[in-house]
Length: 401
Image: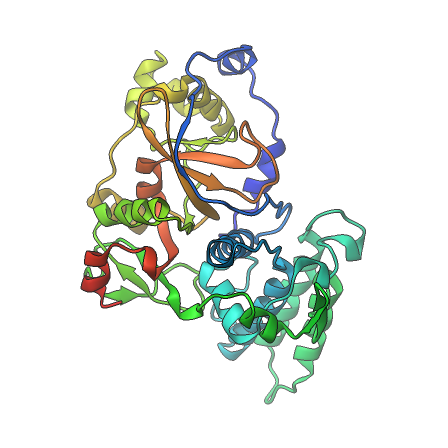
């Protein structure tokens, strides 16, 4: 989940021409009007800013919601702690494999779970505020990773007969300089903790969490590591038929659980206003009265502005198992972004959407919340993490969980 342009593109200017005209209207008659079916309490909207840490923000939001459900307590857990520990672990793997794997900003939901299990966690204020160490108000990894990536590559591709341990000392210095040093001890609400004892105090069982996906290149009802570069720890996801993806999410939300979702938001149906549709491109082109050549010449921003203007009248295509597999195999279905599913809503036409918390600050029409249709989520899911107690009993039985 490493496409940093997604965060930067939030500030892109509105396109010119006929598509921009739709954006200028004071009232869009096609704008969805939502009625909430079910909404789970969540913590505040965060901003990952110029960093590829959606996996970190979205999954800590997931665990914050899990804590809120289990204990009624609200926590602000520290993304910098998870990033510091995770980037060191990833660098060690890259060096161990002599550079024959990727070192990057991205990660998976499992990286956060692994950190909680093995290193613990601290509250946000136990480490420097993101960006503050280098004079910024939010994360900006441009300089940070310009130093970190070649450092790791230099060690991994070294001609040395034997590596010393000092490369880890140097790497830890870079991590601490830009993210802050992870505390050994800290005080929270008058009590003293280590990261491990703090994690233990949160009231969660780290063995309760399972991941799901849906592809045909592995047998259904078995578990396999989803083959994407940022899934570098190779955790297993249960492989279920496509119809069970929404069945699991629906059951989770309706029973008070959130879902840590990872998937593709580079599709034209994902807009910057806070909506996402599994858009039927052929039907959309005919609706706007242009031929294929003109449509293809439009920029992504222009296309998305037009899709925004259609609003709840956007024509959608129902995803199939075959389409998911084909898009995955031909690189169309990509591992872009992590977000938190926390609710279900309906528009004025009765179409159902998942309510999804993003980590781009309070942006868009819904102040950091996206309404993503069920068809979009099913079509574009790479995998998702959920509490096993939120999974329907028949699916749990088939998976043996």
